[in-house]
Length: 98
Image (cartoon, rainbow, N blue to C red):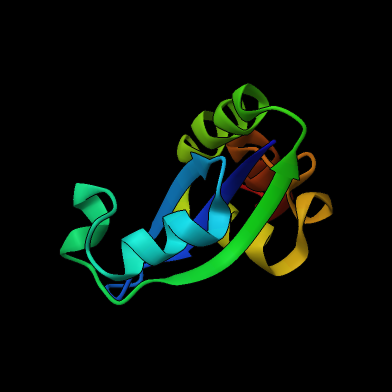
C-alpha cells in the first residue's frame, strides 16, 4: 500500500510526497524530520492524500503532481481529480481567449 500526499507549508507553497505510512510521514514533516524542503517551512498541514495498492503507483503520482503548477495543485486539493481533468496550459489559454 502507498500514499501520495500534498502538504501546505507555512510560506503557502505545496510539498508533494509519497510514503507507505501516511500518518507517520506527516508527523515527521511536522517535527522537522521530513524532507529538507519542509524543515524550514513549518508548520505544515496535510491538504490532500490518495491511497494506492502499491507504493510505485503512489510514487508515479507524486512525480506527476510535482510537475504541476501551484494553481493546478490547489485545484486538485479543492475539487479532486475531476477538477483537474483536461487541465493544461493550452486549454486554459483557449478558454481565456489568449
